[in-house]
Structures are given as structure tokens and as C-alpha cells.
Length: 348
Image (cartoon, rainbow, N blue to C red; front, side, top):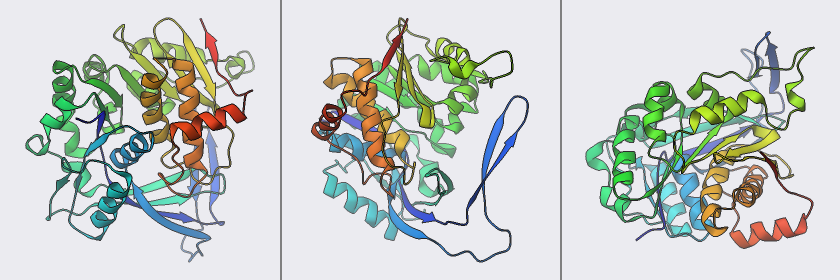
């Protein structure tokens, strides 16, 4: 029996860093958007290059295993050079491989990650096998025997199994952590609400939460300075709409600003744990998986769990990979002990 089983995507990630990349900001009255740009029609030298395994299913399984949980994974891949790399990484991490789906007729997922000088990234993703997980391929018995089911974003046709696996886990008293993806969110709030009703932990970033709730985060104006609030009033509205059951903890991450949580009684804010930023890819996966694992380790101490998640996420962004910087719980505790001033805030 596994402590946790993850379901999501598996990819081979190629990281590309180029000093010629520019960040272009476009502002309107209600929204600010940023774009990564390169000189059109030019041949551009690469500053740095690396490759490693990735994808939400892989990243979170590697994180749970590093934290000491007995971990299994469900994802789909082809039978090619990229799948060999993924399987090798999983064997080294001690992840249970029996529920992995292999289809020789489909290519393994592949991503090119364009990294900016700020450490943020744009991902060019070929979904491959990740987009076609089918009901009959899923090891439901492995889900039934696990204590926690972690659901990473499921894209394309794979999203069609989401309802079934969440309902199955709920019926079999398996704890569910749901990390929403854009495919699910595009199906609308009424669809997402059905998933939320069967999940004990829900993790989204601010943009995903906005898409799910159709609530926009308003920028500062000359009359209203929302940025001076610990928690933006529009984030509070998102939390209240996303929390549909008493037993839930909702988490919304906000990039370099930090992360927020709501348990129905209190709002929590935890700033980002300071670290050098090489690439932000995998930071969200490290944060969400660590938060889930830490809730059990800390006896549901939400604030401490947010801090632990932030520390592990900081370890990931300091490396040119989505999994290289992952930490153990002992390593996380050591960093917290070295940074006694780092803490969280509770807002009633």
C-alpha cells in the first residue's frame, strides 16, 4: 500500500536560457500581461542548456518520494528514449512503477522551457501520451489502496477521467488533493464545483483561481491601494467561492509574492522563502505536494505547512530543473531553523 499515488503528466524537459530574451509588458486599465520576446527572424545563441524529467505527475511523485512517503504514480508515456529517462529517474527515486501506462504507438510528452534572465519561463509543450489517458488504462485498485490521491493537471482527453477518479477516491475514503489545470477550468465553475466537492485540499495559482471563479484581481488605482492589503479583497472572494465544503483547505499561490490558504475560519499568508531563482519550472508542483505531505506531518498545521512548502519550492527554483532541488523534511526543517525570522501571518 502506498502513502500517496499521483496522476498527471510525464515529460522530458529541455531547458534553454538565452541572454537575448526580452520581457515585454502590456498594460490596460484592468490587466497587465507580460511576454517573452526574441528578435524575429534571427539566429540566437543559447546561453545555457540542460534536460531532465518533468511533468506534474512526475514532479509531484518525485517530491513525495523525496519527503519519505511511499509513492506510486499513474501517467502515460510512449516507448522511446524519453520514456527510458523517466523510468530511470523513477527507479532511482524509489517510486512504485506498477501503475505506469506505456503505449508504443504514442510519443512521450516533451517540453522546451525558455527561461528568462528573471528566472521565469515560457513552456512549449508537446503533450503526446499525456493527453490520452483512458478509463480502462487506470489502475483503480492502486488508487483504492493509497491514503492520498494527488491529482496534477490532466490535459486533452485525459481530463475526461477526472470525474471518475475523484468520485472513486471519495467513495473509497481516499484523501484527495486537486491541483487544477486549464483544461478542467475551461469547462466552467459548475464543472469544477463537482470536483471540489470531493477534494479535501485544493491548490491553484492566482491565474487559475481567477479562471475558475471568473473573479478578476483588480490593480491599484489612485483611490484604492489593494497592494497594501495582506490579502487582496478579490482573493478573499475567490477563496469563499472555491471553498464548497467544511472539510477543505484551499491554497492560492501568487508567484513571487507568496501563497495564501483558507480553512473556512482563518486566512493565512506565507511569503516566498528567499533563494536565488534560476528557473521557476516545477515550483508549483513542489509547493503543492510538500503542502499536502506537511499537513500530515504537522498534524494539520496550515501555517507551518505553507512554510515547508515554500522552502521546498525555493529549493527547486534554485536549480535548472523541476526536480533537482527537491529537499527532504529534515533538510526543510534545517533551513527553517537557520531562518528563525521567516514566518506566516494569520488573518481572521
